[in-house]
Image (cartoon, rainbow over all chains, first blue to last red; front, side, top):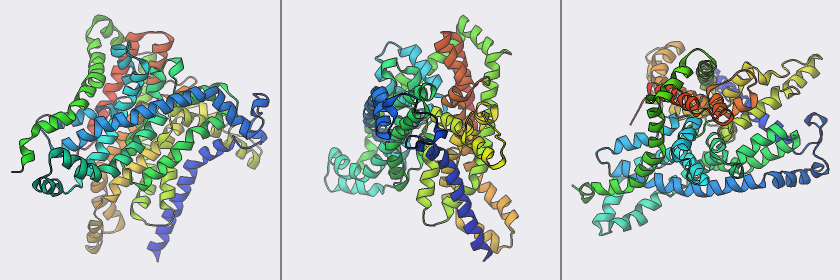
Length: 265
Length: 269
């Protein structure tokens, strides 16, 4: 009896905790849809009178950064998978002298502040095309997530499956494409979602490395928070959250454990 | 032996792109950052950063804020993490998603949320004003306490997720065995729970501490007088174009963070 009561109290407290975490987000997002006086005047003229007009206005002023973020994510997700996933498999299944060291080195960026990495990149490769420098910054922080997620999946493999395929006459490429890859699909999907979520929200590296025309959407959020009226800032926040929430739900459904290591605020 | 043991080169080949990327784009720039300290202007800047003054204050602020936020967020997260890991109930995934949402927020967004809550016309002062007729905590977002709350806000999801993953791997039998052997709740917590949880607590502290040390956006929005190291780096870089000092600050910050990360993380494999 006592145990059950304690259990229910714990669940209730956790629900309250979650509510406290989410309420500032809801409160802020509501500013894009509410006419309440508390949110302040819709002071940027007729352009933001209605909610629809407000969102159109945000797209008009920050559309370019939205596009940049989309391009960034479009480059970072496949590259992180290409660089991280085969390596993660090799670290487990084809280790060689020094491979443990390389795996540890891949996790180093997680302990390096984004500003420090961004600064050192600027100093050594400042002449490189900036878009790709930003991609490099994002990759440094997302590849570790791929290595961990895919590595965890490879750990659960039965090594005999690949061996069985080989003994049945399949060549190495055939095994990779028809046995290993299909087994890794869930981990690859989860990795893509993690990389997407981290890259979409990344600010520190992007803000320092980007030229004005390359600013990503989180940088636009910074501009809008410091210069625009509240409803505009709220609408921009809603646009930022739109792809994040479904991605998060999918990550939870797939059991994404490595997520918490992803991002520096 | 199977044939794969004869193919160590497959491993080298598959990790080669990663090796090239890491050495060229991460390790080389960081090594250059460290090497700069051995040049005369670099050494001078390093001494300037470590001497009493604005830079050292910013570093100490970052250290204190990150350590405090790490410890408090772990304490706050123990309960929710335990419930999420060990209880099954309807709505659990929803609750977990809600708690993990701020993980994707950049610091500027967290800073803005804090302004909404505790800014000059923030929600909390308004509500308190409605209830008591006296608006309190207005503008608290811009104080040290506001900055600390913002740090907690983005650390708590990290702490909950890390601890939950660890709690889920706890062997249930040990607790039951201790109970059968007559151990009380306190004894079980201290002598079974704590030793089991110690590695998880340490790695959670590592995750939260290093995220705080790198935190930049929160201070960018909230910091008025109180400055932290990443913000100072940004100012030196873009405001004063003082690249020597910015580099030295980066180096010290990275060394502090990496050291803490090494010391706290327990490598299990």
